Amino acid sequence: MIVLETERLSLRRMSLDDAPFIIELLNDPAFLRFVGDKGVRTAEDARQYILTGPMDSYERHGFGLWVVELKGSRLPIGICGLLKREILTDVDIGFAFLPGHRSKGYAFESAAAVMDYGRTVLGLRRVVAITDDENTGSHRVLEKIGMTFERMIRLSEGEPEIRLLGLRGQQGVTPFCGSLLLDSFAGQAHCDRPSLRNWRGSMHYLLFYDYVPDYLTRRQALRPAHFEHARPFIERGELVLGGALADPADAGVLLFRGETPDVARAFAAADPYVQRGLVTGWRVRPWTTVLGPGAEVPLP
Image (tube, rainbow, N blue to C red; front, side):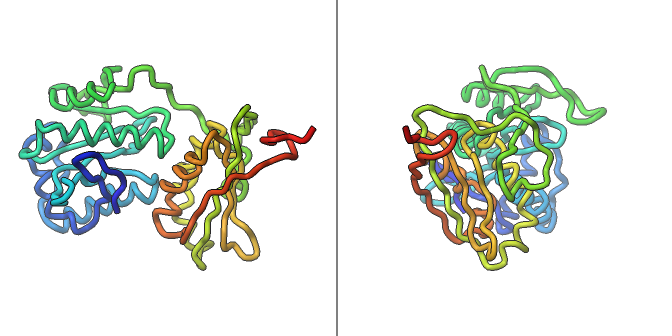
């Protein structure tokens, strides 16, 4: 599945068919030196790496490392994407390319597109990068997309220090606070600060989901990733309410607030429920609200 495209490149989800390419990339001398030895030597090693790495991340977070292909030929030349490591508070960007496709601007082109995707589609407020202190090529790419050195860190005890970089002027992580999401967040702890904000000039939009017949069963495995995807939209006050209809649970409705319907469309496009097939169709409709607090056109 293609996630995003640039002028020369397509970025898609990794599949088990990419095992030969992964063996080649992960055993490149530069990858071994600057990223590390992943112990991938055989086709089975590569398939396990794909299953427990990128594919697991797609299901858990809705993002991960994507295969970078040349448009037209569909030749895989590298990987680029977003990772959520337990050791880091923030999501970080990563990329690696085969030797024959370096110094051609592909790393910058794909990294810039991934950063834009993270901000505009996934709603990430902060993305960082980590890199070996001697990896000058990576340093140049990260500087070109606006990142600057913050500090040296260790990913684990006994490991050498590596650079942590962040975007200039980037905000830190904001704790999640979403007391108004119905159904999806039922039973979870909430903070006292509500996410509903009365934005002057903004409009309301309803996002409708049509669910598969076995939605209630299949959603359990994807709920954590769905919740994580919703967090930044709630925190910004864009996602006001959401939940599944009942008796039967064959559809869902989510209420968004914004200047245009783009925020609702962006949410749906990257929602793990949509990407993993729990949603058979979705649509966004403007909703002219006239009653209640925060109504778009309140009655006199």
